[in-house]
Amino acid sequence: MSVHAVVITAVIAAIASCSSSAQICDGLGEVIPVQRLSTKTGYFSAVKDESYWSQFKQEVWGCTAKQIWLLNRHGTRYPTGNDMGQLYDVLPGMSQRIVQNHNQGRGCLTKESLDQLSDWFPSYGIREKEQLHEMGYEEQFALGEYWRDMFPQLNNVSYDPQKFKIEFTVKNRTGQSAYHFLRGMFGDDAIGTIELPEPYSPNFILRAYKSCPRWLKEVYKNEETTYKERRLFTQGEIFQSTLHAVSSRLGFMHPLTPRELEAIYDECRYEMAWWPKQKSAWCMPFTSYDFEVMEYHQDLKYYYEDSYGTPLNSETACRTYNDLYSHFRTTISQEEAKPQGIFYFAHDKTILKVLARIGLFRPSEHLRHDNFGEMRDRVWRSSFVSPFSANIVFVLYQCGIEFKVGTFFEGQPTPLPELCTGVACRWKELQPWLHENYQTCDLSQICMMHDEL
Image (cartoon, rainbow, N blue to C red; front, side, top):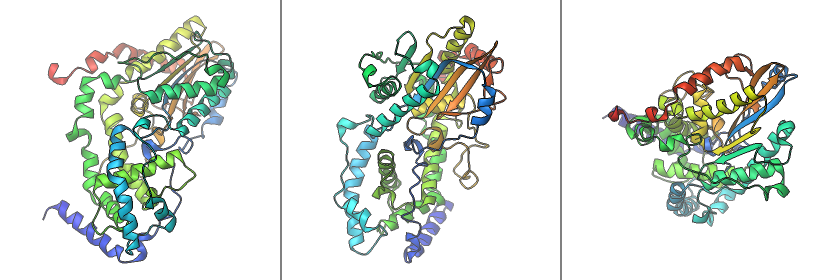
């Protein structure tokens, strides 16, 4: 018998033993960790680190904000086409089987959850595919208000296309995000007069990876390498224990497939992002520990597909920083900001690559299938670094004859320990890295296929 078979046999035996007692139902009905739902975490629920405000204020005391550069992930959305197809395929029939299981005396769900599932059907259709949800409208509107109030000297003015640069990708949800962000910043009366630009593709500032053949082949479509750690984790004891436990709590006598478990988890995450004050029945078979396992399962995907797990990821973000460098350098040399606000709207893949490019939230070691226990307190987790409406903002300050750059992540001052000292970077510290990035950023070379070299 293989090692893998031995592990699975042991897991099944343990779960079967546990299922015969009330222990399998322990831990259900607890508070759903809405702040730990990977990339489907709602922005209002996401964890934000406010610990650097005091130091930051001291470092920029007496300084004047000259220019703001913002990169925003779109707000909370409806499922993608692929997600929607899987949810429609798996969940309506499963909801009925779960109710039947409980009617036959198997399972752990409460009457309230069973009532939700008894006539459950997706609340969305093909027209909503990938579109911004109403909660996404609220997130982006709130962000527009937040940055207006944070920097009134820059943003609490009438909209002028000469003062503000707006750009978003060809996906509707980023254009919708830009609209509601600007509505929050400039008001409902002004938004009708703002003419949004036409998106274009390829866009090497906001979505270079989509036009990078090497990334598409070596990373995104590389099942053997990119998704190896996640595949091994799926096959391992920790994930299989959660799969069998959830199956038992739903009253199934045979374990669900990983695909079915992921569909349950995804619907749970969507519903909690849309309605965070309610309790989705699809979340109820998971304990707090199970949510950690499922988050790590997601992290193993995004870490290698978009972040530190694969060096090429951060390389594809070099044009994004060239844009930042160009705007700030021009403002410093001319002492006048044109435009004074640069607002970009993109995707989680963009955010993750941009963060990795400057070394933000780099973990102490790579996430792997076999170090879940050691990484439970990791600094890099997708729920934190890429929730819906995730944003990274750079603000150029003039402090007498010196310039500084404040970095904000999720609206909070954030130091760049790999690039500069302090919380606000001195321009003379940050400029050499930006200049080197500018000189070495050749996407045609970076994205060239290896077999073409």
